[in-house]
Image (cartoon, rainbow, N blue to C red):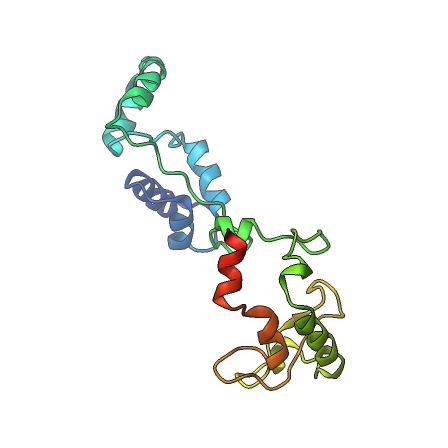
Length: 196
């Protein structure tokens, strides 16, 4: 991809309108967000905090040294003023250009230890015994074989080859078989007792 005059003008226009680098990259096509950011910096368009678009850019081109000094002095005042809003940060994107949410960032990578799980004392021994018996006779199906009629209880580490779903018949209105429902859904009274 080359930066033609037309593409550069589109970039300048969209940047002046306050569009994000991701939006500009999508509009231009065939260019990444990082390439847009690099071009913005090379063109000297990078400072748009509090700018009104092309008028602020024109003023900065006329007096670049003079404009830089007052902006540095004005920055502390902007932090103290309650009416000013901080510039919106662009979200971090994954390799497909999809914003990474806090929930996605919190996902534990494969091979890392899991956070502490509820202890076995919270689950009745009868339910645990029933689950271990059921898992011996489970169908051991993969994700693509799951249906609304198969138990969706996951067993094992998803990062390994030995990961499967129970696959037995589900209990009416639930996503799991009878044994896994006994572990997953606890009576209201026992949950209230634990909170106290």
